[in-house]
Image (cartoon, rainbow, N blue to C red; front, side):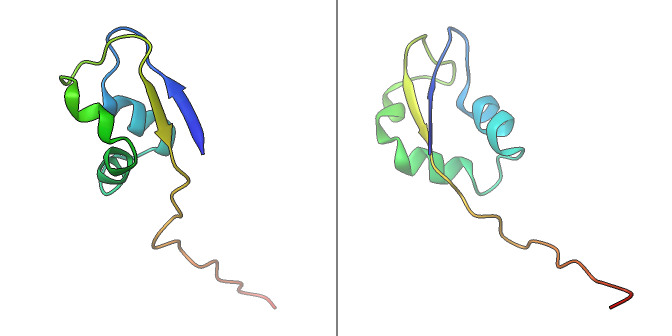
Length: 68
């Protein structure tokens, strides 16, 4: 778990994309973990703490070994 502190002008979707590399399916989980974010507009003020939980990778591709 990581705690991110916003800088003026941050948006949640950009923070999530930068941290996880995607927003689909992850943004909702981050919002669930940080219900206090619902009081803010899309552009967040500086100093807001956001907990970025560990989210396990789904649909990980299995490595295939050709030569065993």
